[in-house]
Length: 475
Image 1 (cartoon, rainbow, N blue to C red):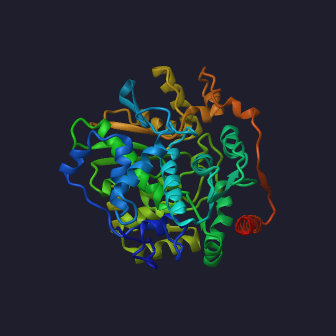
Image 2: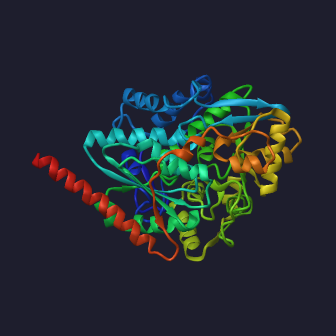
């Protein structure tokens, strides 16, 4: 398995090459040069595989034996998924009205991103210890990625991590899940801006090739292929637990854009998807009518992880649904970057709509209504992001004719304000202890040079490592 840039400049790269990277050198994202195809017999052979087993099956298809042996890979996955609170890792709750909730949030930070980042952290540590190399991870978060990334590498000898979070744009609980991680290798900035704004200095860092090389800079946002690779297993696991017979179609309702699900379908998994979003609707407009454009400001909502205007993985979807035409992807993405808009061609939309069959936009009122209804009918509480998908389930109230699942991306405990606003009489206090824990963070204020601040911090980290290395050699 080899990797390339979605825009065509680079090819023939190993999994390790793309794991230890951010954006590709031409500004694109790293993607497999080809996608493995699974037969019906192969799907049937996986039908009763555990979640960790499916992560192994997916990773084995995208990482060569020459890079990591099967024994090493299996041990790495098993050891990092041990941190989850339920033996099955992922559970499915069958609620009234054919509402099946796929609980992806049983990890250390109660978010689905723990599933991928726990394994990505293990993969990074495997290579770093093998080569005695140091890295600095640079992460922008809208709420959940930051804490999952921090938990995956906190205290690790060969890794520093710098996280930018949008102060006041994620919940207080989400912010405390980050700022209460005070290990020496953790560096957190509270930014007076939204998720797209804090991404700008991060992109500038990654677009400076010599700076990236000099400081061993990488990302484990969703631009990192390793994270997407692990998330493919979510879709296989959900499919096998929901289908009556392997081969029948299952529909999955996904909060946001579902790049990993599209790859799973490309590999032969019989699924269709509905992409559900909040009022920041760029994903819905792109996937429903080809209108990939930035419109207005980011709107603060009850589902803050979706409060973005420029989703990274649209580029990977273009790569998939142009039949991996890198030249075409480059032209489309460069036009978008110049003009903040591009029209997705009709033939690409025709191909895409065979996988993502519909989109749905939920307002805050829709979110609260869905949260209330789920609770009233089931005495079960969903988070506001999961409620976006549940709102579609209730809106499309006719039987779809195939099994259907809602991907639940986080536990409601992270969003007590949304639970209260939805008039659900359940106190979300399992994370209340965070209020009394010590915190550590720095500021990026409006009007300051965020790019300059970020570069300086990364340079300080590298200088500290060099000094420490010299002291060790002297000793």
